[in-house]
Length: 486
Image (cartoon, rainbow, N blue to C red):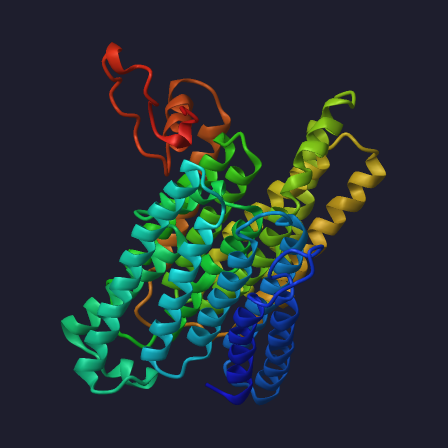
């Protein structure tokens, strides 16, 4: 690791020790930890500036800053949120330890240190989930996360051992020397590890279950932990595996489609946020499978900042819901929705043509971004506020789309260059987009097909209901805890 990365990791290890220092009776045990983590964030910020100036591993430096800064913010929030919780000290220590493992894997200059830090973050995060309480649902979440994540870590260790034993070196540059079936196996194993960390199919069951844990833990999970697959795939990108991208694309594509609909079925705030994260991680895996590592990294960093704020603000959802119920509902404007969608679509399409974004190797991914912006424009245009306010918000959405296409999308290559070989064809992402549009229309409709889609999405990530017991044992709890049958 570089000196600044080593300093960042050392500050996080010191934060683990600080978590066990005694505090005043009025303070939450372990609440001194955020200040040590903040020092790690300062070191990471200096390292990011140095990486930008030297143009060396900007992606790793930016992710290191993101992880440390978000950990400090969430811990500051937890200092009040966990006041009176007997597991508060364990949360501060484990969250700092998970951040230290993540930083070590990000800053690693060989595969052995990367996989060691990766597993340290995994084990710490599983223990973090368990600090959410003694409720059976929390124990179930820790159990399911443990099985899924440790399977992924086992696959990563197998990939590293196979690569090192074949090439005789643990350096990242040696990965390009893999060939034949060995390269294929290593690529698939790394893809499995990334899919498990992202909570994507077939490991999609552990992420929804974590909604039962505490809010600070949820924020750390969704803001940083699940995003690690993007960097892992970037580090192992030199492996010439033709099958690995297909594993990523199929798993990520299936998760993105179903989790988007599943988000509409969840009645709870955290449940909707969890499924939204799953859908975003599916998009990240598809982007990596297309070779667009820079786009994937930009999206996971933006998603981390956005989702952390939503989880930390989840407690005020009840107040917002009560405020909505006390207001008189007003009719939404269909013409405004059409106008908003058209304005955003024209602005985005014109920018894509003017900037030459359509010639980018990953331009097909813009279909998802533009479609999201168009839907946002339609939602704003259909609002019940004054026409002038709606026009201003539509203009803001259009400007955001223009800024993404003209600035963010081209700048993605500063984080990571696009891969040129061993990626999925453009037709795969195009077919995925068409499938998403069709599924969205069905989910918004009515009828037997829409009902079946709803039922499938509702059960996504949940174990099936067992057969009803005999009448003599009906007093016992029935069904999995996710269905609320306690």
